[in-house]
Image 1: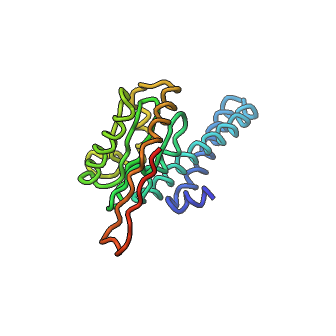
Image 2 (image 1 turned 135 degrees about the vertical axis):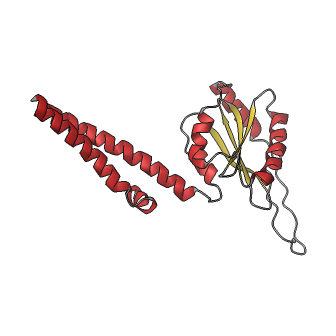
Image 3 (image 1 turned 180 degrees about the horizontal axis):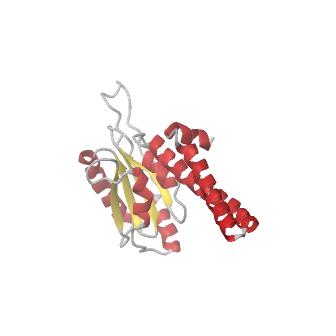
Length: 208
């Protein structure tokens, strides 16, 4: 299934995987013939070929995932939820009527707000969400990041790496404590586009 995804994203993807594995095996065989250690290096070559093929396969699969998600609503949330380690992700904590989104991530750096949408629109959302977070998470660093392909934004392919480079300000128990406190914040509900139908009522967020 993953191979089919890679093939759709890059028709040359699987040939590259095979070529990298076979090239590694051929190199080990040649060295074995020259040094007289053919059988030993043949065994090592098979193991190295499998390892190199799997590494290349994994990298191409990740690139294929990024290419499929790029431009899709919620792409940043999908990338954030795939991060390994102590990361608490709350997708879509704020959404506006233009379907711009702000996601909240809590980890060792502190609280990270990640937006999706044009920079001219999401900046106000990030500022407002940052104020809400700081009322609850006192003395906790709060970062705001704009994901996207615009100027000053972080492409989703580099989003995980960008978060991993942030300084480690919290310890593991503090991460869970901050996450529990922020769960009590009411979610910002999206405003529907256009006029509301007659007799419709706006939903009220539940307070804990």
